[in-house]
View 1 (cartoon, rainbow, N blue to C red):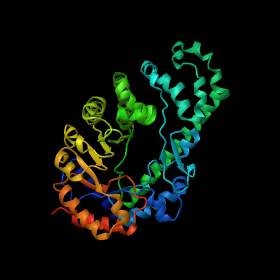
View 2: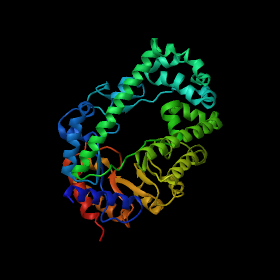
View 3: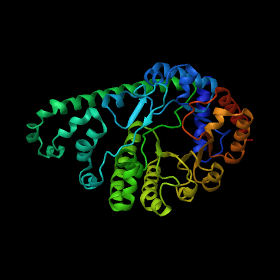
View 4: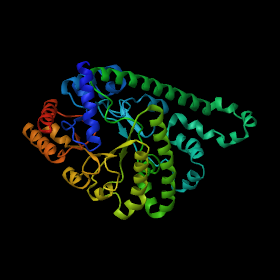
Length: 416
């Protein structure tokens, strides 16, 4: 066995043990290095995203320099499909913002308050002919598409599809095909880059598999927007719940089928609107938690481990998280009291996070070492903890302080 193979097995086992609430040989270190790669390489963030070979070279350099157990670059990493479709909900370095600005999400009300009935009646038709033309400028021709349920007439309907290849509709189909081709090429690069990382001693990344989210967040992020969803909570909660139930079925079908097809056994769920302060606990119970819990439990029943990013502060919601199947989910916490998280859900889920990004930016080194030591000794006690930053990004971090953090994790995170 080569040294890289040995290290890869050690890292994979360390992460797997922690995810299952076992005590590994030491606390695993997860490094979401993100846009810090551009800083290390002396290049713009735009080039980092658009020069895939350079980005991979920098990722390999950082992995070898810092030696974490898992490392990944910016997420998402390739703007090409989004730009090809004229995505109206994202802006990218050099495209809508400065070349050294990070990817940004632009929230809009792409679904109107009076469109729940149309969505519930035939979500596929509504998405294709109403939502996509609004969300993607290059797909505006889809508004001219005839109802696809007319295909129920089989060969009879084929006489009416000539318009699919002409005019604005034809252009939209061709734009969609170009974006799909770009995504296919991106997947091919991803597979090759994964093989390169394995050859260097890094196994599958910590975050892998399909990305889905809480049904409430799906409606809020991509359809109704913050203002719209908050009005819906008060004015039409029943329709909001009904729409969430449909979205949950779509998401589960996608995630389960993707994992079956690829052999992956994890799914990533970034959460945005369930944290403290967005809604009351009563509203959380009926409009957020039930739907999210059903998704998480169903994933685990299908052999899939949900990696859940609990964005914001979830201190008031931790008792709910304790209801999840023990040792079957992973919780990455941003602003929650990580020591309270350990107390309440430490025997329920593997905990990820803990290191404030501000410490890795400003230090001082002594504070980085001291806080790392506390995290390892208190949150890492008994296993079930993976050291990581509170935010999935290291942009702006001081490389010297990152090295202090890495070394301290390996020093204080070793189990006797």
